[in-house]
Length: 170
Length: 287
Ligand SMILES: Cc1cc2nc3c(=O)[nH]c(=O)nc-3n(C[C@H](O)[C@H](O)[C@H](O)COP(=O)(O)OP(=O)(O)OC[C@H]3O[C@@H](n4cnc5c(N)ncnc54)[C@H](O)[C@@H]3O)c2cc1C
Ligand code: FES
Ligand code: FES
Image (cartoon, rainbow over all chains, first blue to last red; front, side, top):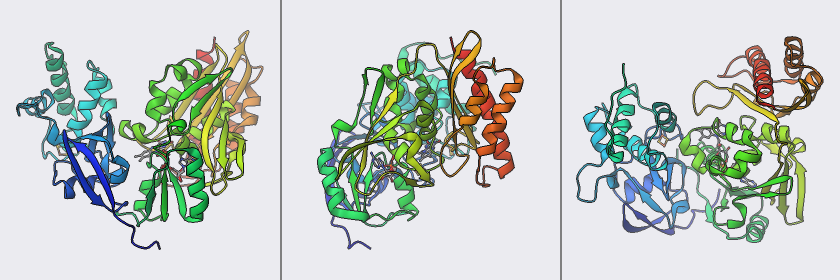
């Protein structure tokens, strides 16, 4: 066994704020975010890279933060669910969509869903229903059956594009 | 689920990475996207004392066409592959396969180099690389060498990679215009490794198969090249008899494990079906 590894200094920009900290190399990014930065919106569901509850946005990529070491994120720009609201503090189109369309029940998966959907809509502002479902396939929800999460994202897409939100026929 | 302690290194050139791996010896491992290695470390199935992160090495990333070959840097992610016009034009089967790997988050991180160097029989790219006749470029203390994908895999997690060596790039022959291709993967859900999968690349001439190559994923301890199965369809119009013969020849070399994805007989059965489906779909695409 290696001797206790030396702590390393990391710095990154999280939700627009420069932060730094001293971490063991084995510290997972999700633990750094939740424990060092006290940003507990990012959830830990499975710890095995399956559920997506820990998804954060790193340099324009959706990443499961339970599967990256904090040292790997040194120098990067990160967005968590705490950084999703509009600059004036009002709900973003996605947050509003989740509220209006009842896109959550227990809410455990919601931070990961919103952060993932944020990147999805940046890459594809007019996704089809199938593209939304494929785009959030790395995020599990045990409550909603996904139907209302898909609607929430469709609502947000329509709002962002200034088009009318049309409910798909049942 | 906390990995064991290790020391982290982030070299900025291949030369430095190789030097580090040489100095640190057996207890050092390269770290690419980390999406196979970190889960293993959390389970303490891997406990390296040193991780050499390849992320800071710009020369390992990116794709370029070099005559008849597409050279893909080891640190190119599955997401990068999907975004690349070079790949879409010359090797569309890489797109098709990358989309069947894991989920969007994993594809942003997982690299082609990590996928093929890992040696996990469940990885999808190795059988595809064998099917395409790809060559791996390796660099170590003794210099550079090339190993064909078909000669690289020796057993589960056992490859031709020597200690201290890293895989720098994968060289894939661009496929001829009009070739047909398909990667058929049976999985239980998105994000799952294959219960069985088959890669097919072929060309047709006058309604019959002129050339064909078939690879198999997760149907043995290593990816397999199903040469007899491919031979069985050459010269045929891919009629039912030829498809059946190919599926049987492929089944004859499958040695899957019986596990949560099904018992041995089932996995061989569906493995043959993946071969038939991939052949049919590839032929329909061929010009
Ligand atoms: C939920 C989930 C689902 C997945 N589903 C699939 C799937 O369906 N199909 C599939 O193919 N994969 C799947 N994967 C694996 C994923 O594609 C991995 O990213 C990939 O196998 C490894 O790539 P990596 O860059 O993450 O490598 P790492 O995890 O960083 O490394 C893997 C191994 O390769 C070694 N290595 C990495 N790069 C090099 C190099 N350049 N030279 C020498 N050695 C190197 C490392 O030391 C390590 O031993 C899944 C992963 C997860 C978490
Ligand atoms: S906690 Fe990271 S994927 Fe589930
Ligand atoms: S709302 Fe409960 S897990 Fe999605």
